[in-house]
Length: 189
Ligand SMILES: [Zn+2]
Image (tube, rainbow, N blue to C red; front, side, top):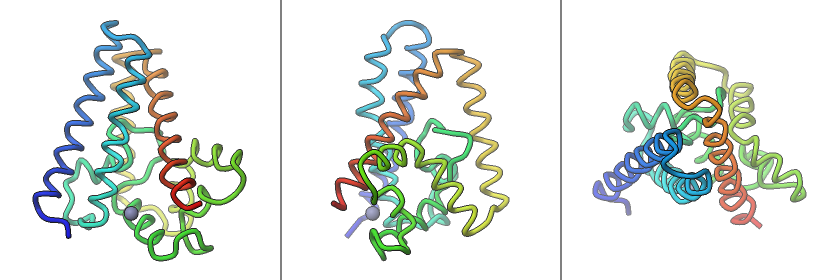
């Protein structure tokens, strides 16, 4: 059973992870930390967000979750200009639990196949899940608003860090991709 205490703990973990990532990026932009340290921080912090949001999906519907987490969903720093919001990732994930790795599992595409395919799919999972979800369930107003908010966040981060944002983004994508392989491929094989 998940108590309200657990829920507030997950929400706190999300907030802390988001703050740490933003602070680490700020320190990197200001040349206070090297890219290796930034990578290490991303590697320990982003999974904390992902695991907490996963736990929240199992206990809180999209109506019960706060707007910030609902918008950002898979990562506090937008991984792409095409990422889903909480209602869609929640729906995909719960459907994955109902029919794991079968034809009707929306996550089957990044679980099955040879390792090379799995790596390519893991690295492109945010966009692929977005496109697959929109093809299946269509696009809605809230998803559009969330995409604009994420675009704005990306714009601000690029404005502040210039080329340095590319490294930050690359590290986030590598860590997210590795997490995808661990949580989907390895767990189900
Ligand atoms: Zn789950």
